Image (cartoon, rainbow, N blue to C red; front, side, top):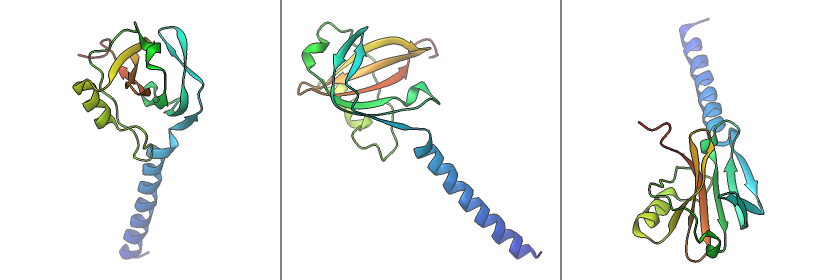
Length: 146
């Protein structure tokens, strides 16, 4: 076998491996969740409409959700003062973390802490807009922050 053949073979293998690894990371570890009828908010069920979300068994931090709710259902729910939406794969287009974060900071939406320590060291956050649009995710709480 010549060196040229070996290098071309390794290049082809590397390209295939890289594409497979990328696709696995972007698509393989997520499950789409559609039409969830309700979410838990501080131990009680709140009805939701048009739920589209992501979740995964590989990490509790992969939860994302876009849905509609009645904003009145969040009266009295604990506010979250450090909500920072986590990113998503580009193909999950209903959830824009930069816009959600900007809206939280500007006061255009309100962030609620709906489940403290839902998973070990993870709180679930729901952001609600006055028109009923809502988004959810989990983020690390003070247990694992330095």
